[in-house]
Image (cartoon, rainbow, N blue to C red):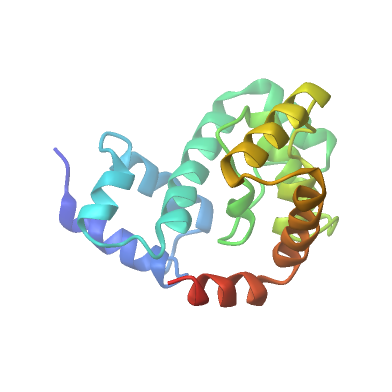
Length: 180
């Protein structure tokens, strides 16, 4: 039976970047995953108006899933041992932001890059995005030009400005406020 009171308490702990005394982070997210795996968590969070921390909560669930699956996967255990980890490394609220709905090995490669100081969460996530094929780029460019009714020169200008906006989030936030 689903204990929604316990789930709500666990969500509050995650929202506050805490873990209960006597538990490791990995143990806690595994327990959280076991509690919420049978419910549509994102829908539940929206009904509870917990959308502000939705990514963190969903990633905590994903972390529990990844850890539990990794404990049963000999290939992952071998990979982690080769990288110098005798057991599954302890994750934290920052490192779980790297987890995606991909295979276990890809997730662990990204987490280990983060642990080794190879970049921030954002840098690692953006460096592992797939590179678009020329046909895909052409199709996307065509779509944007048609939807915005602009030419090649205007598209290039827009892409240059958009790149600056992505690097400086304050510009993006300011534009969002102005467009309201």
